[in-house]
Picture 1 (spheres, rainbow, N blue to C red):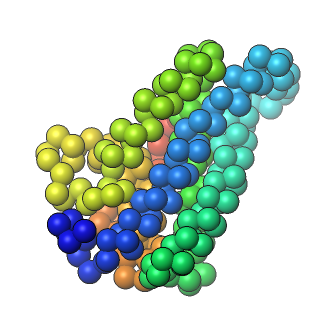
Picture 2: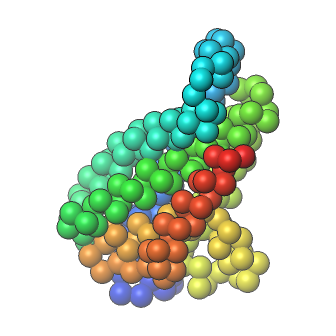
Picture 3: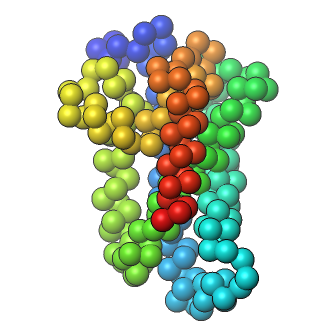
Length: 200
């Protein structure tokens, strides 16, 4: 894969954070189907009449998706280790990866909750989820750097939250990884987007 310029990183190293972000986002984007099941079973109505604010219910679902996503991180880390990816095992870096994984999963699961509230049925939700997952993945820096993208795709990548998750993971997961956007920007965009989605 020498045709793709990845700087000082081997392509397999460059790809590993993108695969982690992809697996987390793909699982989280379908998390909203649980809300449709809960509504059909009458469980959601019981939640809504409880004294807890609705934002707390959304954040609870988001945190649940984030914790579940950590299992994906463990699997990807194990596979990356077997493939010889240069991983950074420092405690601060690992803590940052955990934070990004939970934050990214929370963001995309909250987005899926909004979709579930709009489409109402499981069949429609599955269709919309499948339509969204691949464009989100390919319109990001998960498998190639944004520098080689055409201008229109680069613009889309910079409004895609997955780009910021991958960028942060690339800086924290890899021994020689760097963030092209800056870790404060990565965490800030993900946190701000999550807060906006919760308010919606």
